[in-house]
Length: 261
Image (cartoon, rainbow, N blue to C red; front, side, top):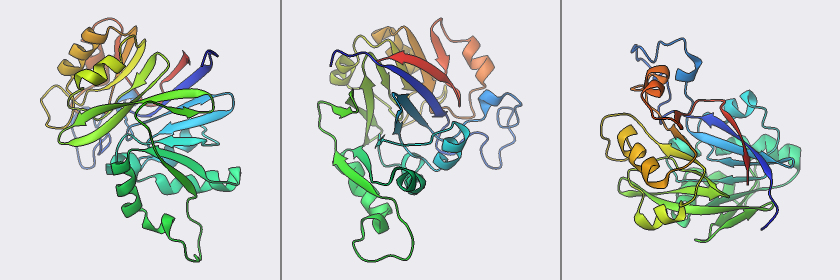
Protein backbone atom coordinates (compact mmCIF):
# COMPACT_ATOMS: atom_id res chain seq x y z
CA UNK A 1 0.00 0.00 0.00
CA UNK A 2 1.49 3.28 -1.14
CA UNK A 3 -0.66 5.75 0.77
CA UNK A 4 1.10 7.18 3.82
CA UNK A 5 -0.92 7.89 6.96
CA UNK A 6 -0.25 9.97 10.04
CA UNK A 7 -0.64 7.69 13.04
CA UNK A 8 -0.71 8.80 16.68
CA UNK A 9 0.70 6.12 18.98
CA UNK A 10 -0.14 6.40 22.68
CA UNK A 11 1.55 4.29 25.35
CA UNK A 12 -1.35 3.18 27.54
CA UNK A 13 0.91 1.31 29.93
CA UNK A 14 4.66 0.75 30.24
CA UNK A 15 4.78 -1.41 33.35
CA UNK A 16 5.37 -5.03 34.14
CA UNK A 17 2.69 -7.61 35.00
CA UNK A 18 2.14 -6.33 38.57
CA UNK A 19 2.35 -2.66 37.65
CA UNK A 20 4.31 0.11 39.34
CA UNK A 21 3.84 0.96 42.18
CA UNK A 22 3.73 -2.70 43.16
CA UNK A 23 1.25 -3.66 45.86
CA UNK A 24 2.87 -3.57 49.30
CA UNK A 25 6.23 -2.30 48.05
CA UNK A 26 7.93 0.65 49.73
CA UNK A 27 10.97 0.94 47.46
CA UNK A 28 12.10 4.34 46.19
CA UNK A 29 10.50 3.88 42.77
CA UNK A 30 7.15 2.72 44.15
CA UNK A 31 7.10 5.77 46.47
CA UNK A 32 8.34 8.16 43.77
CA UNK A 33 6.55 11.42 42.94
CA UNK A 34 7.75 11.22 39.33
CA UNK A 35 4.64 10.36 37.27
CA UNK A 36 6.86 8.46 34.82
CA UNK A 37 7.42 5.90 37.61
CA UNK A 38 3.69 5.12 37.71
CA UNK A 39 3.26 2.33 35.19
CA UNK A 40 0.06 0.55 34.22
CA UNK A 41 0.15 -2.84 32.52
CA UNK A 42 1.69 -2.84 29.01
CA UNK A 43 -0.40 -1.72 26.04
CA UNK A 44 -0.43 0.83 23.22
CA UNK A 45 -3.06 2.22 20.90
CA UNK A 46 -2.72 3.62 17.41
CA UNK A 47 -5.14 6.20 16.02
CA UNK A 48 -5.51 7.44 12.47
CA UNK A 49 -8.35 8.75 10.29
CA UNK A 50 -10.86 8.30 13.10
CA UNK A 51 -9.81 4.67 13.62
CA UNK A 52 -8.28 3.08 16.71
CA UNK A 53 -6.32 -0.16 17.07
CA UNK A 54 -5.33 -1.39 20.53
CA UNK A 55 -2.47 -3.81 21.11
CA UNK A 56 -3.42 -5.87 24.21
CA UNK A 57 -6.22 -5.25 26.68
CA UNK A 58 -4.70 -5.83 30.11
CA UNK A 59 -6.47 -5.53 33.48
CA UNK A 60 -5.95 -1.74 33.40
CA UNK A 61 -7.66 -1.28 30.02
CA UNK A 62 -10.78 0.47 31.37
CA UNK A 63 -8.65 2.98 33.27
CA UNK A 64 -6.38 3.48 30.26
CA UNK A 65 -9.30 4.08 27.90
CA UNK A 66 -10.68 6.74 30.24
CA UNK A 67 -7.29 8.37 30.86
CA UNK A 68 -6.36 8.66 27.19
CA UNK A 69 -9.72 9.36 25.62
CA UNK A 70 -10.27 6.16 23.67
CA UNK A 71 -13.83 6.48 22.38
CA UNK A 72 -13.83 3.67 19.79
CA UNK A 73 -11.93 0.47 19.09
CA UNK A 74 -11.80 -0.82 15.53
CA UNK A 75 -9.59 -3.84 16.23
CA UNK A 76 -7.53 -5.47 18.96
CA UNK A 77 -4.23 -7.22 18.30
CA UNK A 78 -3.03 -9.58 21.02
CA UNK A 79 0.64 -10.33 21.58
CA UNK A 80 -0.03 -13.38 23.79
CA UNK A 81 -2.46 -14.67 26.41
CA UNK A 82 -0.86 -13.78 29.74
CA UNK A 83 -3.15 -12.13 32.29
CA UNK A 84 -1.52 -8.71 32.08
CA UNK A 85 -2.32 -8.59 28.35
CA UNK A 86 -5.84 -10.04 28.04
CA UNK A 87 -7.84 -9.63 31.25
CA UNK A 88 -9.41 -6.32 30.18
CA UNK A 89 -11.14 -7.91 27.21
CA UNK A 90 -14.55 -7.62 28.89
CA UNK A 91 -14.16 -3.83 28.85
CA UNK A 92 -14.78 -3.86 25.11
CA UNK A 93 -18.51 -3.97 25.89
CA UNK A 94 -19.02 -0.16 26.00
CA UNK A 95 -17.40 0.06 22.56
CA UNK A 96 -19.86 -2.55 21.27
CA UNK A 97 -22.70 -0.39 22.58
CA UNK A 98 -21.31 2.78 20.97
CA UNK A 99 -20.34 1.18 17.67
CA UNK A 100 -23.37 -1.13 17.43
CA UNK A 101 -21.37 -4.11 16.30
CA UNK A 102 -18.66 -6.67 17.04
CA UNK A 103 -14.96 -5.79 17.23
CA UNK A 104 -12.38 -7.80 15.26
CA UNK A 105 -9.75 -9.47 17.45
CA UNK A 106 -6.51 -10.83 15.97
CA UNK A 107 -4.23 -13.32 17.73
CA UNK A 108 -2.34 -16.54 17.23
CA UNK A 109 -4.28 -19.80 17.40
CA UNK A 110 -2.69 -20.59 20.77
CA UNK A 111 -3.61 -17.19 22.22
CA UNK A 112 -7.20 -17.45 20.99
CA UNK A 113 -7.50 -20.90 22.54
CA UNK A 114 -6.58 -19.46 25.95
CA UNK A 115 -8.91 -16.46 25.48
CA UNK A 116 -11.76 -18.85 24.71
CA UNK A 117 -11.10 -20.67 27.98
CA UNK A 118 -10.77 -17.55 30.13
CA UNK A 119 -13.78 -15.80 28.57
CA UNK A 120 -15.93 -18.83 27.78
CA UNK A 121 -19.12 -16.82 28.43
CA UNK A 122 -18.33 -14.61 25.44
CA UNK A 123 -18.57 -17.61 23.13
CA UNK A 124 -21.66 -19.19 24.72
CA UNK A 125 -24.48 -19.35 22.17
CA UNK A 126 -27.38 -19.59 24.61
CA UNK A 127 -29.51 -16.78 26.03
CA UNK A 128 -27.98 -14.42 28.57
CA UNK A 129 -29.43 -11.99 31.11
CA UNK A 130 -26.53 -9.54 30.83
CA UNK A 131 -24.37 -8.08 28.10
CA UNK A 132 -21.15 -9.65 26.97
CA UNK A 133 -18.43 -8.51 24.59
CA UNK A 134 -19.12 -9.06 20.93
CA UNK A 135 -15.93 -9.92 19.08
CA UNK A 136 -14.93 -11.49 15.78
CA UNK A 137 -11.88 -13.70 16.27
CA UNK A 138 -9.24 -14.04 13.58
CA UNK A 139 -6.11 -16.18 13.64
CA UNK A 140 -3.60 -13.85 12.14
CA UNK A 141 -1.66 -15.03 9.11
CA UNK A 142 2.10 -15.18 9.16
CA UNK A 143 2.50 -12.42 6.58
CA UNK A 144 0.34 -9.49 7.62
CA UNK A 145 -2.94 -8.19 9.02
CA UNK A 146 -4.58 -5.26 7.24
CA UNK A 147 -6.72 -2.98 9.40
CA UNK A 148 -8.34 -0.01 7.66
CA UNK A 149 -5.47 0.42 5.25
CA UNK A 150 -2.53 -0.21 7.59
CA UNK A 151 -0.54 -3.43 7.48
CA UNK A 152 0.58 -5.08 10.73
CA UNK A 153 3.23 -7.77 10.36
CA UNK A 154 3.33 -10.30 13.24
CA UNK A 155 6.88 -10.75 14.56
CA UNK A 156 7.37 -14.02 16.51
CA UNK A 157 9.55 -13.74 19.62
CA UNK A 158 10.48 -16.09 22.45
CA UNK A 159 8.95 -15.38 25.84
CA UNK A 160 10.78 -17.93 27.96
CA UNK A 161 9.36 -21.26 26.78
CA UNK A 162 6.16 -19.57 25.57
CA UNK A 163 5.14 -17.79 22.41
CA UNK A 164 4.59 -14.08 21.89
CA UNK A 165 4.30 -11.77 18.91
CA UNK A 166 5.30 -8.22 18.30
CA UNK A 167 3.99 -6.18 15.40
CA UNK A 168 5.66 -4.14 12.72
CA UNK A 169 3.59 -1.38 11.10
CA UNK A 170 5.32 0.55 8.35
CA UNK A 171 8.85 1.34 9.54
CA UNK A 172 7.93 1.07 13.22
CA UNK A 173 7.51 -1.87 15.56
CA UNK A 174 6.17 -2.72 19.00
CA UNK A 175 7.67 -5.72 20.82
CA UNK A 176 6.89 -6.55 24.41
CA UNK A 177 7.44 -9.66 26.54
CA UNK A 178 10.43 -11.26 24.89
CA UNK A 179 13.49 -13.04 26.21
CA UNK A 180 14.95 -13.56 22.74
CA UNK A 181 14.28 -12.33 19.23
CA UNK A 182 15.05 -15.09 16.72
CA UNK A 183 17.23 -14.29 13.75
CA UNK A 184 14.36 -14.60 11.28
CA UNK A 185 12.37 -12.08 13.32
CA UNK A 186 15.30 -9.68 13.46
CA UNK A 187 15.25 -9.76 9.67
CA UNK A 188 11.57 -8.75 9.76
CA UNK A 189 12.63 -5.71 11.79
CA UNK A 190 15.37 -4.46 9.50
CA UNK A 191 14.96 -0.80 8.61
CA UNK A 192 12.71 0.10 11.54
CA UNK A 193 12.79 3.76 12.55
CA UNK A 194 10.92 3.66 15.89
CA UNK A 195 11.20 0.48 17.92
CA UNK A 196 9.63 -0.55 21.23
CA UNK A 197 11.39 -3.31 23.15
CA UNK A 198 10.90 -5.20 26.41
CA UNK A 199 13.47 -4.11 29.03
CA UNK A 200 12.23 -5.36 32.38
CA UNK A 201 15.26 -4.54 34.53
CA UNK A 202 19.05 -4.83 34.68
CA UNK A 203 19.18 -8.29 36.29
CA UNK A 204 18.60 -11.35 34.07
CA UNK A 205 15.09 -12.80 33.92
CA UNK A 206 14.03 -16.12 32.37
CA UNK A 207 11.19 -14.67 30.26
CA UNK A 208 12.07 -11.01 29.68
CA UNK A 209 14.77 -8.96 28.05
CA UNK A 210 17.06 -6.81 30.17
CA UNK A 211 18.23 -3.27 29.50
CA UNK A 212 21.60 -4.61 28.36
CA UNK A 213 20.08 -7.19 26.02
CA UNK A 214 17.70 -4.67 24.47
CA UNK A 215 20.58 -2.25 23.95
CA UNK A 216 22.28 -4.99 21.94
CA UNK A 217 19.13 -5.29 19.82
CA UNK A 218 19.15 -1.53 19.28
CA UNK A 219 22.79 -1.69 18.22
CA UNK A 220 21.93 -4.47 15.76
CA UNK A 221 18.86 -2.81 14.20
CA UNK A 222 19.93 0.86 14.55
CA UNK A 223 16.46 2.46 14.73
CA UNK A 224 16.22 6.24 14.78
CA UNK A 225 14.52 6.05 18.20
CA UNK A 226 14.05 3.17 20.62
CA UNK A 227 11.73 2.99 23.62
CA UNK A 228 11.97 0.40 26.37
CA UNK A 229 8.74 -0.87 27.92
CA UNK A 230 7.36 -3.56 30.27
CA UNK A 231 9.45 -1.90 32.99
CA UNK A 232 9.63 -3.10 36.60
CA UNK A 233 10.15 -1.07 39.76
CA UNK A 234 13.86 -1.86 39.53
CA UNK A 235 14.26 1.09 37.12
CA UNK A 236 13.85 4.68 38.28
CA UNK A 237 12.88 6.61 35.16
CA UNK A 238 15.15 9.63 35.54
CA UNK A 239 18.24 7.68 36.56
CA UNK A 240 17.82 4.85 34.04
CA UNK A 241 17.12 7.31 31.22
CA UNK A 242 20.28 9.27 32.06
CA UNK A 243 22.38 6.13 31.52
CA UNK A 244 20.95 5.30 28.08
CA UNK A 245 22.69 6.29 24.84
CA UNK A 246 21.27 9.01 22.56
CA UNK A 247 18.07 7.99 20.83
CA UNK A 248 17.17 5.35 23.44
CA UNK A 249 14.53 6.11 26.05
CA UNK A 250 12.34 4.54 28.69
CA UNK A 251 8.71 4.67 27.62
CA UNK A 252 6.20 6.14 30.05
CA UNK A 253 2.45 6.02 30.40
CA UNK A 254 0.87 8.70 28.24
CA UNK A 255 3.81 9.03 25.84
CA UNK A 256 2.52 10.06 22.42
CA UNK A 257 4.37 9.78 19.14
CA UNK A 258 3.30 11.04 15.72
CA UNK A 259 4.35 8.44 13.17
CA UNK A 260 4.06 8.14 9.42
CA UNK A 261 2.94 4.69 8.31
